[in-house]
Image (tube, rainbow, N blue to C red; front, side, top):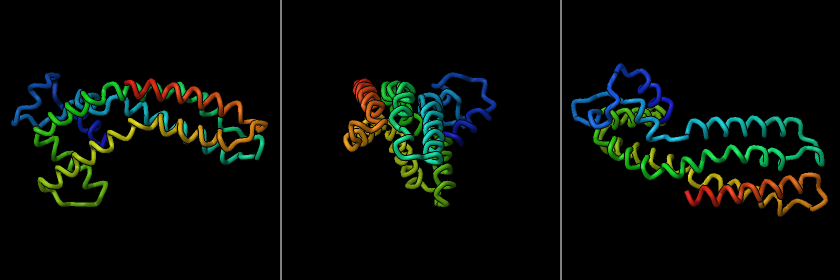
Length: 188
């Protein structure tokens, strides 16, 4: 949803930045401001997740037992997870704004078409529009628990790592850092 909506917003020839104007029934534009208000720090989250995947793939491709460490990777990247705290703190406003955007028929249709193209579903009725918006709402909720989940996984990895293993200390530090961050994110 993000990429097509961001592209449409950037392609918009609108010079208006007034959100209230864009909600009128005659307005057919999707403004760049909408993307920022709905997706918050999603582009940053996506970028960091891509970086993490790349780093993990490098570790996997060069894996050597008792030499390859994962804890250091999660400890280093834990600082990037602060973008989740920003996401969580703005989430309620984003959802309220998304609900307001639903009154714009162009927005509803665009979300439905984005969903249809990714699902190969060409059914463009009101029911499909509602399903598409609900799917978007669900997807927007996923980052809310990500830091807590990663913290849980790393703590399980720590629990199953022997204290004399070279990665034990790194995993313990990563667990502490991610647990603290998870608490901060939970508090919003």
